[in-house]
Image 1 (cartoon, rainbow, N blue to C red):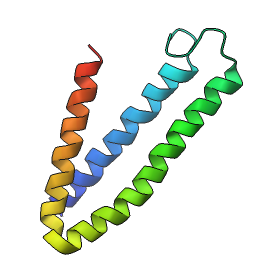
Image 2 (tube, one colour; image 1 turned 60 degrees about the horizontal axis):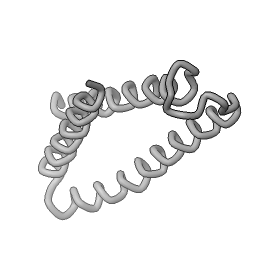
Image 3 (cartoon, helix red, strand yellow; image 1 turned 135 degrees about the vertical axis):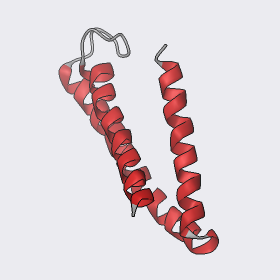
Image 4 (cartoon, rainbow, N blue to C red; image 1 turned 180 degrees about the horizontal axis):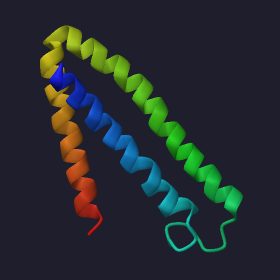
Length: 97
């Protein structure tokens, strides 16, 4: 059970990183990611689109990972996902500096 809870925790960390970072980058006026002239509606709309794309990719990715776990086994597919998540978090951490 411990590895399963580790996977759930790491997945929750991913969401915990995504939402505050996106809101700071897109909705905050101190960030220069979007034009300073962009309206609040446009900023919130872009943030909603990006979060929607993330959730749709999560939806279809979970189905693909389910098929993959049927082929190579659940343990191997979880390890592959954890390694991919760790690489993605590392790249995100390096990009912040």
